[in-house]
Amino acid sequence: MENSQIERRLLVCQNRTCRKQGSAKVLATFHKFDMPNITVEKSGCLGKCGNGPMILVLPEELWYGHVEPQNIAVIMEKYLLG
Image (cartoon, rainbow, N blue to C red):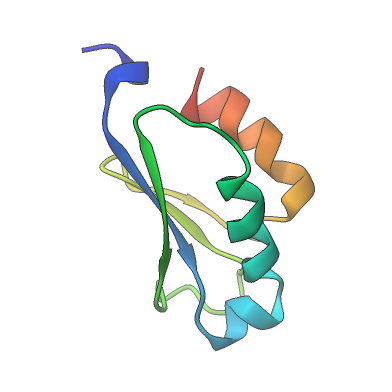
């Protein structure tokens, strides 16, 4: 199965620490893009406080920390859609 056909879930932490670090903007930015086979969801604490905003991509269990809205296009192009 090709990478682009994998059904993925992208979890964006919306717990207190990540929200203070801008995770609501990260979540909103991901929702602006059309990403086939990727469901973007808000999540509770992902257990990596202090490294936020945190993103977890399932099923691969890829972790992204310190994500900012301007990083999202690169993350999508290089790792999620490419």
